[in-house]
Amino acid sequence: MTKNLGANPTPRAVVMEHALAHLGQGDPRMARLIERHGPPPLRRTTNVFASLARAIIYQQLSGKAADTICGRFEALWEGDSFPLPEQVLAAPPDALRGVGLSRQKASYLLDLAARFSRGEVRAGDFDQLSDEEIARELTAVKGIGQWSADMFLIFALNRPDVLPVGDLGIQKGMQIYFRMRVLPKPERMVRSAAPWRPYRSIASWYMYRVAENGLAT
Image (cartoon, rainbow, N blue to C red; front, side):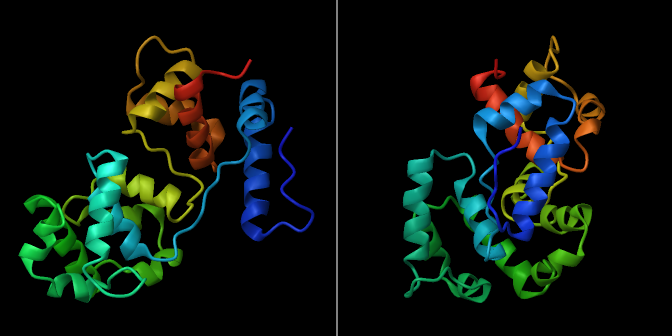
C-alpha cells in the first residue's frame, strides 16, 4: 500500500506514486518499508552552483562545523542570495581561507566557479542531459567524484534511476535487505537492484532506512 499523495498531485508527486507502486508490487518487504517510512522527502534544487559548492564545503566535516563554515562563506557577500561563480572567482584567497576553508577546498570551489563561468558545467541544459553526461561534467571538477555526482543527481536533481554503488549506507542496506553475508560489490548491487528500475534512486533511499533501522517487520 502506498501513501496517498493528494487529490490533485503535481507531476513530481505522480512520478513518486508510480515509483512506490512499482517498488512495492510483488515485494512485501519493500511495501512494508514504504508504509513504514512514507515517500522520500526529495526537493529539487533551484540553484545548481550553490548545491555543488555546499556539497564541497560539507565534505568530511560534521554538520555543525560545515554549517558554520558555509554561513561564514556566504556572509562574505552582501545580500541573501548565494554568491555567483564570478563573485567567488573575484574573492581574495585569504578571504576564502579566513572563513575556515582548507586550502584544498578553497581550490575546489574556485575550480567549480571557473567551470561554471566558462560554461563547462551546463547547468541550464541538465534537463536535456543524461545522468551519465551530467556525472561526466561534474566529476571533471576538482573535489567532485562519482559518489558526489550520484548524490547530486538524486537529492538535487531528483533523477529517479540512480544507484550509488559507492555509498556505504546503501551497501549496508542492500546487504541486510538481500541477506548477503558480506557487503556487496558494485556488480552484485547492479544485478540485485535490476527489479527496481527505473526507480533505483527511490529504492536507494529506502536502503538508507534499512541500514539505519533494519527491515520492517
